[in-house]
Length: 610
Image (cartoon, rainbow, N blue to C red):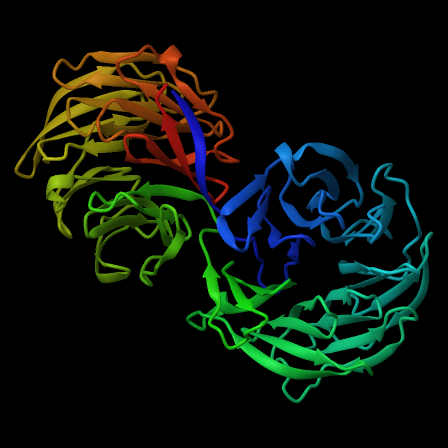
């Protein structure tokens, strides 16, 4: 068998409250670049399922930009490193340079594609650096800033100029190459968050947390105008982007609005349209990033959601792209609809995906803050959080219906449901196991060992509880009591996951010592052993609906698929499935496997029998 990646549902851009983020686009297509953790995401605005992820940074990435010809991408991270790699074909690394001693906040290519300027945080004077991209040679001295430099821009036409701005409220102008300080402006009274040249280089604009946008002459650096304050933003302006013809700009602000401005020849800006992004009006709807990409106006909210407006029809409702920003810890596929995938991340977000379409909406449950465990059956979701509560939430189509909770007294470690009688659930805690029927604890049982995970048979007649010492305890369930029937002792590490096969003839278990077993349920003997191909702990496990395959996901970033009736050496290994580790696995049908992980992405793998 072989596995091929059929779909990726991308993570959202990482955001930070009180700071803008700088996204960029391909000059020759509708692809955009943004970062999340150590990943750089290349997303096609016209087809959000067309996603590519670059994950070679050793530290969290901060910004990425296409070269003027669209062939190369330069991306930077919090360690001050810039990596230059191919935009296509396996993203081969061309060069790597340590540019600053601290975080890089912005970088820009020169229009001839020969030089790169980067700005950010650093010790001493080195807050801005311009260098030849092929050799790393410096091409100028950048004095004049005393605090973090949040943004930099290269004039896109000759004579070349570089402009920078930052937390010292300054906008600095440099002539070159080699670049030398020319002049400094202190027209802003707060952090200057973003500076950008118009496409023809005749003007540049700076925007600030003082709610102002100031326009300068591109060649001399002199101030020529401002954005009108009459219809201006009511909060910090975090980002700005020019239209391709250089006659308009797009700004976004903490006041949750985006504005399109017409820039006159004399350099003043008049409001053309205020764009309202969809959202509930909460803090997460503050806008922190924007990009004018061909006919698309793109905005990014603090919650990471991307809204896509049409530049040629500003009255048209925006298309929203969303997903997760944090580690996706669990996945579920309701039996009634194998095209629907539910994913949950520990920050309390549950997202719906539809195979072939992608993002389909969020299930918002205001009561739930952080989700630790998550299970779904037909029309119900059961979650546990860090607040000692177990929630049962009914699903009505796209909406979450009634939510009921019960406090189990200590933090739940794992939850398992009887699929055919979803009223019955087992919740593992430090003190033992709680048996729930609906939202009532019908029994609290002290086990005499430290339990880690559990599984309950679909009909609710049997349960298996894994322990920290690697043992599997099998219990029969009668009424509201558990009776221990057997103890299986094969694991050499704490048990991390247990799952019954769909036909209930087998169960599989995995441990923190990177080993998995498939057991015959009737004889309680090992049916498939030597499943020792991961190099780190096993986090998750899933069965195919026909019970012929079992898949394991690990901290080592790999997914391994075994066929139960064949030796483990015939396995399929999907290497690097998720940067940082695989935390969720579920089959949608016998030949499609869904995975999720630390990188906040969801991927669908097609398994091809050979």
